[in-house]
Length: 93
Image (cartoon, rainbow, N blue to C red; front, top):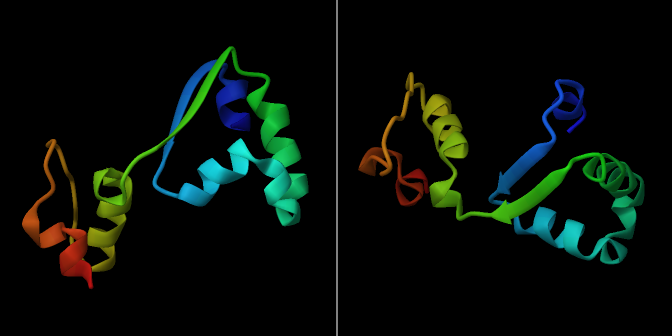
């Protein structure tokens, strides 16, 4: 977030496949062990003109899918709106 503010990028959309991150930002009082991190998060968040954080399914998170492919020893570039069968999360287990 600090890097985005520094360049200055003030209209941001963060996308995550982690439901805990969404829960932390929605109800920070339920996550007391992250109080200092969430304080910093909200401080930086308030510096953006427009801010949104959204949840996506893990199967739609192409960065995570690319990391999975690299961990299998593949050189991976994905330019498509569909996931190859060999890279599906079901194949990972």
